[in-house]
Image (cartoon, rainbow, N blue to C red; front, side):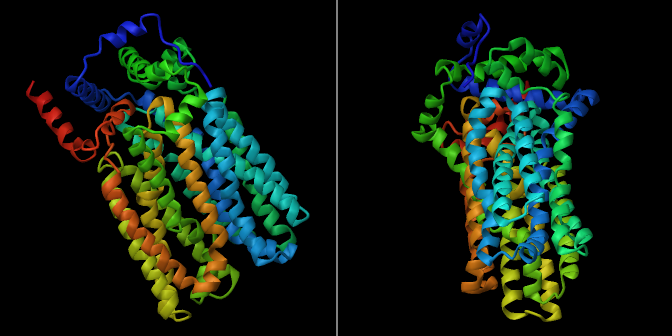
Amino acid sequence: MGLMGMQENGSEELSEIPLGTKTKYNRMDSDLTETKHGLQTNNPETNKYVFVCAIFASLNSVLLGYDVGVMSGAIIFIREDLKITEVQQEVLVGILSIISLLGSLAGGKTTDAIGRKWTIGLAAVIFQIGGAIMALAPSFKVLIIGRLLCGVGIGFGVMIAPVYIAEISPAVARGSLTSFPEIFINFGILLGYISNYAFSKLPAHINWRIMLGVGLIPSVVIAVALFFIPESPRWLVLQNRIEEARVVLINITNSEKEAEEKLQEIQIAAGSANADKYESKAVWLEILRPSPPIRRMLITGCGIQCFQQITGIDTTVYYSPQIFKNAGITGNSQAFAATIAVGFTKTLFILIAILFIDKLGRKPLLYASTIGMTVSLFSLSFSLAFLSHAKAGIILAILAVCGNVASFSVGLGPICWVLSSEIFPLRLRAQASALGAVGNRVSSGVISMSFLSVSRTITTAGTFFIFGLISCFAVAFVHYCVPETKGKTLEDIEVLFQNEGELQVSQIEMGDAERLMQKS
């Protein structure tokens, strides 16, 4: 673990901070000033630089998305070429999510040791090696080895990208920028679906290898990008590399004055990490034996991660060709064409989410998302149970799948990663985000590896009915456990969890502070 160092006058700065309720209003004051500053003195060059950094940091997500999308079609030809069983098919699909927990668990410690930026590069290298092994695999055993490596790389990637982007983004745009990994996951899924359709007519012994091999291209771009994107200024402060952090902040803020103010905020927020010497045991002890505020953060962050997957989104994407065949579509080409429509829908609605996440806020989009998913999942269950192989049933099934992925993409998909990267204090952020990512990947793996078996037992319609019920619980979870974090700095968000009542009244207090500022 890296040691957080302060400047020589750090303790004097801490002693000058007013305590009590005045502190809270001073923090809100600085937040409002930052937000106003970001809107009024918008620097196109700064915004462009942060925007490009967020894009490069999100490229690992293309690898995950492409793998999810392409495997939905490649698995059909792998089964034909390598003569694998249904159980082996489930293992091949789901093992990536299960094994990615190793990458996520190691990701927190790795990113604190080598930095956010180089952890992104490590994720790409591991995935590239695994992807090459899969594309050249002569047997199921070798295929699984490559799959395991891909899973570790994805575990690193899904954990680090939102953390890195959140730590370089201004509060006014953090929600949109932190959603970039989800955009790229959706874009990767779409590319995977297109790849399935484009190569499906080639011989079965070679088409799935080309499908998997094409997914290695983004990792080459990541290798080049590492020479241009900066390290996280918050990580640099933790390493006592204050001057380097200052240089990065000058590049990603609108002025040197704003950079200095932000640097002081980061140093103050990291003070508790300095007090604990930022030891790994101390961090995990605080997570395993949390105080009430940390417990509420963990419930929110890990809970939203699990709900993202146990509502069945990965099974919808992985097994969409089989779902459409159950609905009555015949032939691989027709099923693959229908999945492309699903991919376009998913990508389109994630772009809508990006436009509104920092305008409407997190909770309104989460409400729309979870309610929409509930309706879509119940509709899909109905179409498969009562209208299977009828024209109306096929249309309803396609609309229900598109509605499910659209609802997911407009809220639960991107906001899950936004929340998990912004609600934890700096001293715990990497490890706690890694823990949430583990819950996400384990949930995905369990659902994906059991879908075919469960569907055979209670039918596909019954399985999606259960997903619909789980989605109902997700609506309640959003209502009771998720605070609104729109427009707040990472340091201000910590205040929301200090007192339980603040989860409900935080918006009212912020409005009061805003009116006081206007009067003054």
